Image (tube, rainbow, N blue to C red; front, side, top):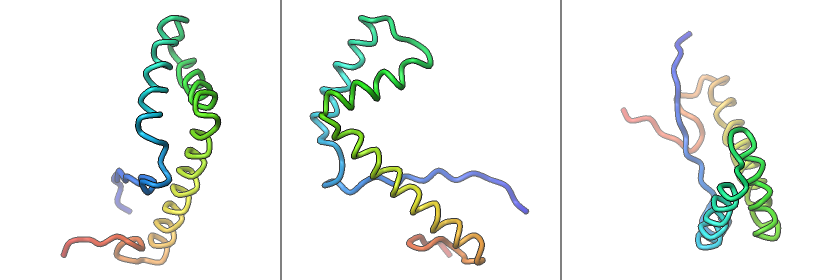
Length: 96
């Protein structure tokens, strides 16, 4: 068995992404609140997720759920390809 690593990017289609301007405004205000409130360390991620959820009226949560579902589907495709001995996962090609 060989070992190694692979980094995959699996972005949402543009129409399913959070509006970039809304994302940027929300991130900017969230980072400012972190600094104002002295939030650091492991408290940063839950703080920012909560801020994004409230500032986007739940749009960020819906987007994150879509990301999780798409990543799970891609992981399943890769696992099936790996376990069936395919040369490459469905939808991917390996240069000759």
